[in-house]
Length: 419
Ligand SMILES: Nc1ncnc2c1ncn2[C@@H]1O[C@H](COP(=O)(O)OP(=O)(O)O)[C@@H](O)[C@H]1O
Ligand SMILES: [Mg+2]
Image (cartoon, rainbow, N blue to C red; front, side):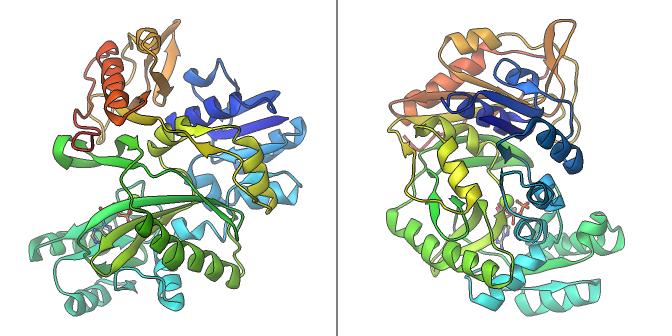
């Protein structure tokens, strides 16, 4: 079979790595891919959001299955473009991907179908927002409706923070089209969990639980980032998992089907575990990055048949099982990340890290004059696996100690307190 992976980050490198191990795969392509994948896949220089070009490419090579990493192509309708040409792709249609593409859509869907979520309102002006905040009281959360690369959510604890948020949303129009509508919602307290399933719209196959680290600095300090680390398994009691499935995942899939937006692909629920039960904070329409880097190494067996089943709408019994080993991922980022990022700095120690037994997934890297150099904010995902979480974390950090480039930043507390 011929497979195509869309995207060029460490999540997609992990996907390529996993898919390359399938005996069913004869040819593997990545668009645009990255230098780390080049040994496993043919990287074709097509951007992940160029959905028509991607479909042209897949059609001309007769790609049997396409797997999409990032949300943007899905929100833009890559599934629809591929379906029109009878090309198989795992991922939701444009209208189903609105669960991530529009936080207002999801809020209204939850309200209509009784899916537990933070009490809130969709507003379109400063005046409406102020009225909603008066009802909800402080603290309150303001969220840009559209895609905002993880920067569109402002938690306001004080009147000053609220005023600043209102200015950014409605006076400065910082989020442009993505901020034309804003969700104003109550601030929930509790432990946050992510819950991911692969689904064909009816059957679901829950992925192993992972925990990620969103803030730049140890102890969850510093600015929000795309994600600085992750580990799996994460503690998630069986009853909680079953509550999430019963009250959030299945009702959402049914609701979407009823709305004429059948959902197929990965559905990622971000939830707060409150005293009243799990409540939805958001849906994403794809795998998480860096969660994928710790989940895929824990899956035993071939992922390809399961992805094919999901794409065809006939997900049966799981074809892969979770192995007992643990995995931990530490992201190393360039100087200045997440505001800006320095590029072009030579990276050393990648092979040494691999020789230790760690997995090295590339994200912001490039090859210049035969050397691997930094080319973006999050540079590499260093993943350790082992029979216990402690061993996985220790291996990941031994790998980190081998790798070096100017201004390298990373968290030192991934997995800490969980073993
Ligand atoms: N209602 C809420 N109450 C408390 N914290 C929230 C709430 N909504 C979001 N957050 C916090 O903000 C983060 C980002 O919000 P989220 O809805 O996941 O949007 P995105 O991932 O698109 O930025 C969450 O991970 C959570 O920590
Ligand atoms: Mg989120």
